[in-house]
Image (cartoon, rainbow, N blue to C red):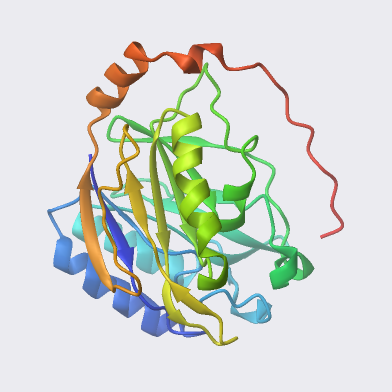
Length: 263
C-alpha cells in the first residue's frame, strides 16, 4: 500500500481555504497513492476556542472530502471538528472512494489546550480495513497513552496512523512516542503533523514520519518542510516480521475501564 504524508501549514479558522489547499495537493498525487494522511483538524487548525466552526457530520467539509476521495481514487485520513446530537467531537476520519466514510472520535482530550472544555471524548476503538490493510487511527494526544493503542492479538492492525497538531515546544515527545508505539505493537507507524504558526501563536515544526518494521523513518521530513512524501508499505514484509519475531503472541490480556467525564 502506498501512503502519502501531507505536511503543510493550516490556514487558521478558514475551512474553505484549507479544503482548497488539500484539493490541490491530492490532485498532484492522483494515481500515485492509495491513501493520503493530513494533520489533525486540517480544515480549521486546532481552534479549540471556536466551537462555532464545528460542522455536522455529513456537512460541507465531509461532502468535499468524499468528492476528493472519489475523484482522485484515494482514501483520506485526518480529523475535523464535528457536531452531532448537540455534542462536539474532534472526529478522526477515513473517507474512501465510492464507500461509506468511517470515523473515530478522539478519546484523550488535551485539557491544557482547552479541548476538554468543549469536546466530548469518544469511547470506541476501531480497526478499519482498506485494500487489504488493517488500520488503527489515533488523534494527537492519544499517542501518549499506550494502553489505548495496544494491539488486540485477536484482531491485529497493520498500520498505526496518528494525525496531529503537535507544537515544536513538545516535539521531543512526538519523536520518541511515535516509534515506540509502532515498535510495541509490531505495526508500521505513520504520524502527520502540521507546520507553521497558528492563531494562538504556537509554532509547529512538523517532524511527520513513517516508520517501517525496523523503525527506520522512511519519510524523511526536514524541520518546517512543506511537502508530500509517499511511502510504500509492504504488508507481506510486516507479516513475515511478525512470524519471525512473534512477541505479539505474548501480549497480556486486558480490559479497558472507561473513565467517566463531564464533557
